[in-house]
Length: 119
Image 1: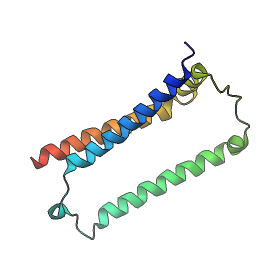
Image 2: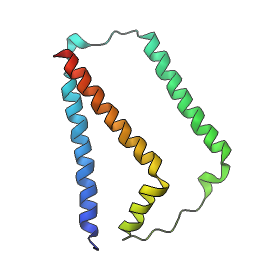
Image 3: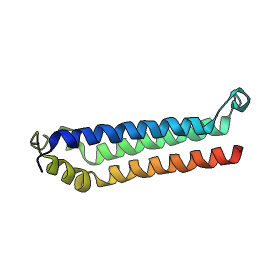
Image 4: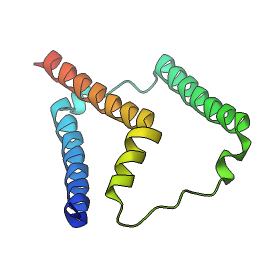
């Protein structure tokens, strides 16, 4: 179809829609001063530190397992190849794409749950 401008415009519109979705999620939480969290939440802090440590440990394991992964030359990419971009997104990068979509879905469901609980 050779409509590169429309493809880029669509990506920008979807990115803006995701930002508005996050804005609505924050607004639905309706956090006020009375809902402020306690200052010392040791269990939550310990759990978050553990999750971050596991995340970085996983990244280090991946880098050690495939040491040349960071130094590989990139694939040639034609500037106007929307078809190439789509193939890369839904073949090589399918797992990160799906993980990002699941994270957005979980965030939306969690926000709706928290908003319903307060009503």
